[in-house]
Image 1: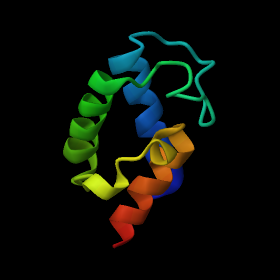
Image 2: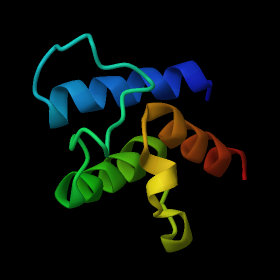
Image 3: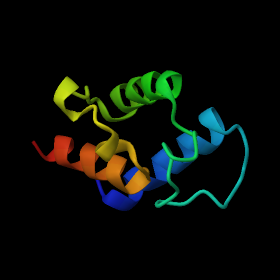
Length: 84
């Protein structure tokens, strides 16, 4: 799966499921944790989404803030897990 496709799916997820809007200002570098878009509840929902959409489980050692700063870091995590 291409990085652009993963980013596109993540952006659609955040817009429809988390923000429930069509706010086009959300981009790959929007600080999701810093802006409070991702909180503990939304993280659980995101893990479920990643599992259902990409067939991936996020192992505990990867559940670090560095991997969830923005859509680029989440995409890196997903793409790296898909390659392995």
